[in-house]
Length: 123
Image 1 (cartoon, rainbow, N blue to C red):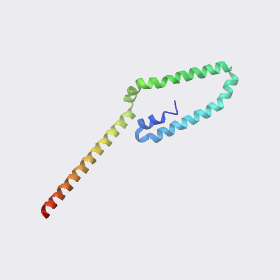
Image 2: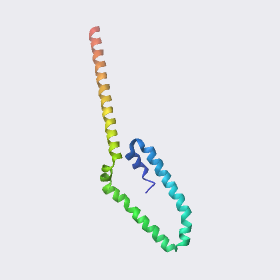
Image 3: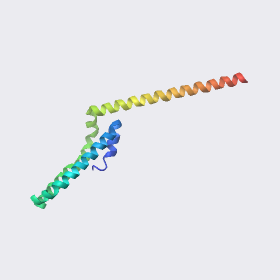
Image 4: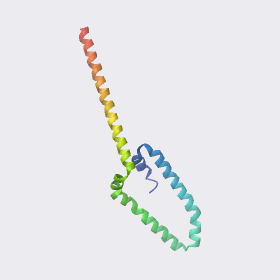
């Protein structure tokens, strides 16, 4: 689950995508290191059947999370102030791009009209 998630973080985090992916990678590596340190003792101190049952229960609970986020994710993100900030920034970027395109279009039309006027004077 953690392996396939960076793509959605990049889409969701906008201009802070590199920080989101870096934080996620750091957390994944830290958890991997912790599991290596604790894993041997966990299986030695607790019977293997119980240790495996505990890990299976944790995995089952974590396995439900993608479905929870699929169903209630838009609602959760709608309440997020950070998500609202990203939406506003995206809308502002879109407005600027539209203005730039309109300006370029107007400049192009003005150049074409000027060229036509020059051609008509020459003729």
